[in-house]
Length: 246
Ligand SMILES: *[C@@H]1O[C@H](CO)[C@@H](O)[C@H](O)[C@H]1NC(C)=O
Ligand SMILES: *[C@@H]1O[C@H](CO)[C@@H](O)[C@H](O)[C@H]1NC(C)=O
Ligand SMILES: *[C@@H]1O[C@H](CO)[C@@H](O)[C@H](O)[C@H]1NC(C)=O
Ligand SMILES: *[C@@H]1O[C@H](CO)[C@@H](O)[C@H](O)[C@H]1NC(C)=O
Ligand SMILES: *[C@@H]1O[C@H](CO)[C@@H](O)[C@H](O)[C@H]1NC(C)=O
Image 1 (cartoon, rainbow, N blue to C red):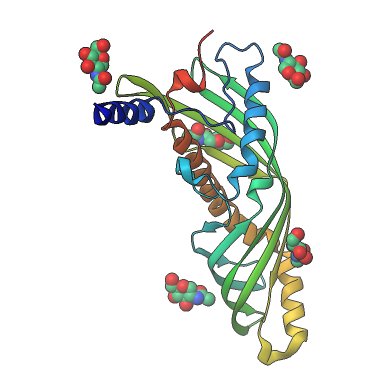
Image 2 (image 1 turned 90 degrees about the vertical axis):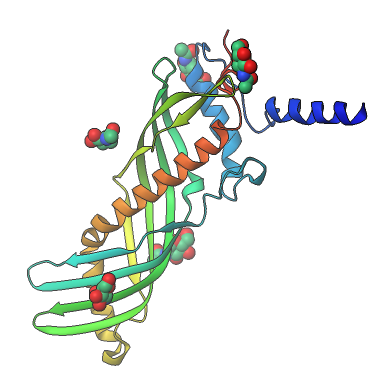
C-alpha cells in the first residue's frame, strides 16, 4: 500500500511539477501582459548567469563563441586573423527596454540593452601592411558597451502527454549601435612595442572590420543560448500552468 502511494505521489508530482517561486505566472488575458512578463524576466534574471540546475537551464556566462575567421583589409593592408576560444561575459546584465507579447500568435517582440559585454580569447594574425608581413598570436580582449538587442521570438504549441507546451524556434536576434573596443596583447614582440602600439591603433581605427565578423558570431551564440534557456523552462511546465486562462 505504501509503495502504491509513493509511486502515485512520484508520478503525480512529476506531472504536476510545481512552479518555483522565481518563475512568475502571468495570466494570458492580463490587460498588461507586457508588464507581467517584464517583471517575470526581472525575477528570473539574477538566476540566469549561473543557470538553474534543477530546471536544466544552462548558465548564460561565460558564453562561448565559435571560431571567427577574418579575411579582409582596407586598401593598404591585408589581414588574416583567426579568433579562437572566445568567451563572453556580461550578457546576463541585459535590461529589457520593451516587450510586446502576442499571445494568439505566440509571438513576442523584445528589445534589450546590454550595458557591457567583455570577451577574451586568442588571436592568430597574419598581416600585410605596405608590403611588410607580420605574424603574431596571443590573447585578444574586447569590450562592447551599450549594444541594443532586437529580438523576435516565435513559439509553437506542441502536445506532450495530453498537455500543451510552448516551444520556441531559434530567436531572431540583432545587435546594433554599441561601441566596441578591441585589444590584442603580445603583438609582434620581436618588433618591439612601437609596432605593437601602431598595430593596435590600426586595429582600433578599423574595429569595424573585426566587429563585422564578431557580431554575427555573437548574435548566433546569444540566440542559441537564450532559446535554449527559454525552452528548458517551457518544456518543464505546461502552457496552462505558466499562462493560465482567465
Ligand atoms: C502597463 O504597465 C506599465 C508599467 O506599470 C504602464 O506604464 C502602462 O500604462 C500599463 N499599460 C496598460 C495598458 O495598463
Ligand atoms: C587560421 O586558420 C587557417 C585554417 O583554418 C590556417 O590556414 C591559418 O594559417 C590560420 N592563421 C591565420 C593567421 O590565418
Ligand atoms: C573592459 O571592461 C573591463 C570590465 O569592465 C575592464 O576591466 C577593462 O579595463 C576594459 N578594457 C578595455 C580595453 O576597455
Ligand atoms: C489523453 O487523453 C485521452 C482522452 O482524454 C485519454 O484516453 C488518454 O489516456 C490520455 N493519455 C495520457 C498519456 O494521459
Ligand atoms: C530576423 O530579423 C531581421 C532584422 O529584424 C530580419 O531582417 C529577418 O528577416 C528576420 N528573420 C526571420 C527568420 O524572421
